[in-house]
Length: 331
Image 1 (tube, rainbow, N blue to C red):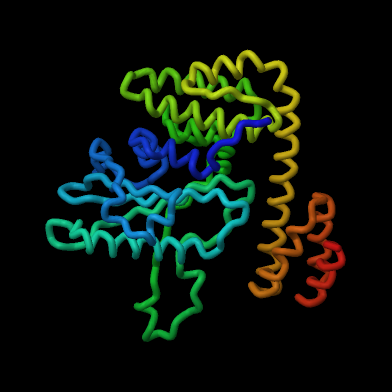
Image 2 (cartoon, rainbow, N blue to C red):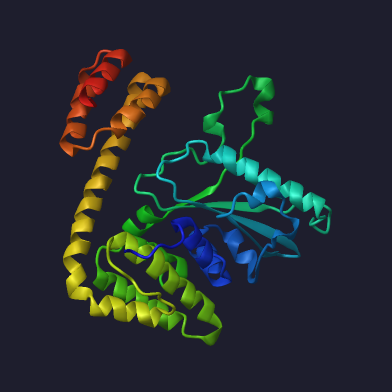
């Protein structure tokens, strides 16, 4: 029986409970000259002592803070690995930031001037679908009359879509978070071994023992069982053990890993085709017809059929005709 372990979310929580992972995430993926003013050496994970039950329910999210000049800047790290994309993510982020601010006021964790600290919300996403939810609140709200425009909320978040970042092959080097993203996108045990070798070198210092073990636990309980279902894995407590396990089973696992890569490639092709169709439907027939098309397209798994629907979209006289054609195709 395959070893049972924590969810993907809790596996990431274990990794991003280490300052080195958060530091490399900020250094490697948060852009802007202002980042240079952050004192990454002051990173500290916020305890639950002043976090209310409303935020404690977000068990797989993490809140860190670090110095920005004389004051603190907070990093709200949201781990999002659900199978479907939440189009209302910006609303959720506004809610979580609001709850955090309430807790900071209650605990009197304010700046020297008595103001609330800035918050950087980061959404870490590792789904197969291309993330297509709005990254700010504004597109989710109907346009306001001129006199109300100033009251529209503008909450946004920084999306880090790991698979797409890794596919772009522009990840920073010698970066722990980038190594994690590369592992998630790796298509063979040989590629994974090379990344593990690098991690062993980067985390050789005795002070990184806990993070080294966190990577090993993530490999043994999440990464390997997901890639090689049905294989028994002994408990892994160090990256050296992970490397030897990959090396010892390289030949036996190659075919299975390749097959998974082919299947994932097909999944990504289907998802890209659905995404293009939805975008075209929205442009031609509007957002209501596009929303109704989403569950119907999700039923279709044949890539050629999805591609042929692109022609059907051009031939449809109106949204009703398009939806009828889509219903027939999805039966």
